Length: 479
Ligand code: FAD
Image (cartoon, rainbow, N blue to C red; front, side, top):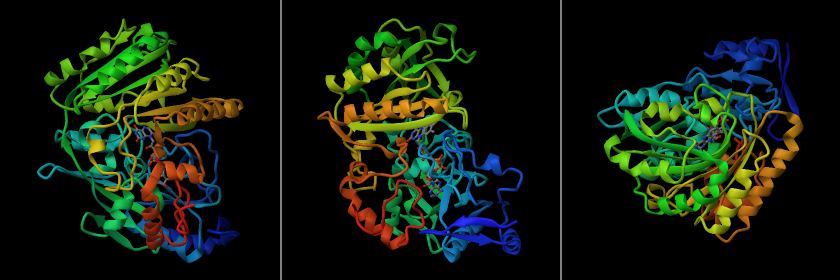
């Protein structure tokens, strides 16, 4: 068969059978064409909105395959999509007629317990990291759903249950091995390719394909104190301000968030919350469970919860306990978020109104508390410039039928706009963005004063913008 692939700037090119055979002989991992078994499975992303057909998929088995895939893309001027865990909300990791560089088979994780360093291949998920690191009582601050990819989450910042104690995921990156647009493998760290290293920590997938990450890990668990009380959603009117006041005095060990959601009828949850609209107050204490018990106790005392799931829990379970709400490829998603400098009554008003009027049971309105270690880094220390935010207000539109696309997306946009207009609105968190293309205002809101430096780094490492299917920073000008 002949495979057609898009060129970077315009037009298409073909790969003949003979050329495909040459590629098959070169790559160690499988080369998947639209006619191969496994093609459809390989192009499924977490977000069910996308039914895209890449021209060719290289399922890389290791760094050598990544290097050769990027070189082939350069020689033939191909448009490339890079896939880590496949959770990107905007669906950049799959694109019609592109060469998809798929790292999903590169999931190795190695822990060095003595130095508390965790080395992670570029296609690993947080479940992979937690499995290996927790064996040694260590954790790298990651996300709150274990099926999410380490790569995209880290490159876009990364917040979860530990960020107030140990910083964003990108703050814990100590080195990365990156295949840059010319097909070279470079190491970036505090002492090697420092500008690249700076840009990788928040600048997204703009600068190359990360074949491996090295993280500083921290002693966490294996048991932590988990706080999780589910109240009737209507109780949020009283609880939200109380939660805000409580979080103002929290030690950095505690990372808390609130969520408006609808709980499905599943044996994983107590019957009291089945099919109920709930307001969840949750937190993890990153220290010993004994210390954590008193710290998270107030979570169940803001009112009368329908269910209080608080208690000591294995850190790995905490990391996995929301997974069931996000079945792969089954939800259509569009998310937008605003970082806010304070949670004034005006912000609470929008949170409450929107939280109580979500367009679909799976649509989530949530607000994680920031601050702590995140704020102790300066805005120019990493590309992730928005350090001052006290909270993030995120509208995570999730629904199931295509017929609801427009209504759900408009609801998310309207809710986002409402918060963005308020005086305490600061920026936006791009890991929670469903927009395929960034407009200049969003790019500015996300990167702030770091944008010029990111553009210079982009020019140095990817002058042709080979890696453009992402929250793109163009090498030309910071418009
Ligand atoms: P992919 O779709 O594979 O990749 C997204 C983009 O990252 C790609 O388009 C590419 O540009 C880049 N990329 C991926 N792999 C590589 C690589 N190896 N080298 C270079 N670039 C690469 N974010 C948080 O901060 N905290 C959370 O708790 C959190 N929870 C989430 C839960 C769910 C259910 C979902 C869907 C998302 C969540 N996110 C969270 C957002 C998440 O961080 C982003 O969607 C992130 O992009 C996912 O990374 P991925 O590797 O899985 O995605």
